Image (tube, rainbow, N blue to C red; front, side):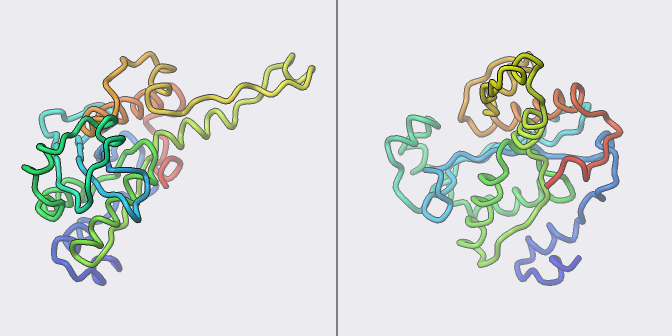
Length: 224
């Protein structure tokens, strides 16, 4: 409510006015939206978004028919390294709208839902910077970070008896999206496509809750 009152842009005001899900809500009752962004690089102070993919979801259902995918034109030049990663070409960028053209639909799709991502620092920081550059205001939203959940699980795991006996340190466990999905026997998808990665994160959360948590787990135990 405080953010809605302070917001100047009407679209941002409407986004905050939709409210936030209470932290004591069981996960089974939480409306969510999985989102991924592809960018020109990893520095939000210098790089920009080139594509966005999102899918509304709950623990039981991923609404693929309501998915959205946008290619947007950054205000900086594409570099060859990022093109190799996300496979978005200069010709696609030239035909794409500026990020400002999708703000209405993007905020409407996120409103009232808890955002699901794999690595919250990317989506939060890049979306915040992109909005500040277009409307002069950033955005705040709670997230469930599937990478953070994997980190919590594997940091908490104790080494086995013989490892403790001989003082061996366990090998580090990868918490990258594809590697995390493999642990739950989920299929391997093409990486670095915003909509596919959003789907991959949505499926990963469903698997994490099924294996490590429970549908009646309270939202506040997972979100950040």
